Amino acid sequence: METLRYRFDGRDPVQARHDHALVGVVASGNLEVLVERVPLDGAMEIEIVTAARGFGEIWQAVLDDFAARHPLRDVRISINDVGATPAVVGLRLDQALEALREGGA
Image (cartoon, rainbow, N blue to C red; front, side, top):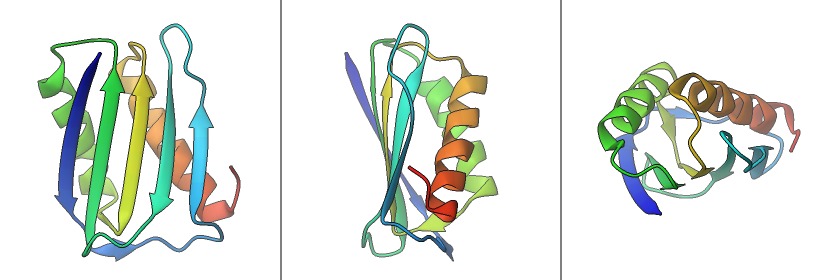
C-alpha cells in the first residue's frame, strides 16, 4: 500500500447540507471517496491510500485538474483505491462533491 498526500490552496467554500459524503465501493478496480468539510485554513487536503504503487505523477495530474475545476476551501478528501483508472477517479471525485452539496451520502 502507498499513501499519498496533497494540499491545494482553496478559494470557494462548499455550500452543503451535511458535513461529509461517501461515494464508491472499494472493490477490484474501484475506489471510495470521503469528502468532509473541516477547518483547514482555506486549504483542500487530499489523502490517497492505494494498492497501486508508483503512480504519484498520475494522481497529481488528476488532482490538479480537480482542484482547478473545484478550488474548494476547508475540505478534506480521503480516497481508498485498489487500482481505479484516472477516469473513474475523476468521476468519483465529482460524484462525492455533488453528494456533499445535495446532502446525499
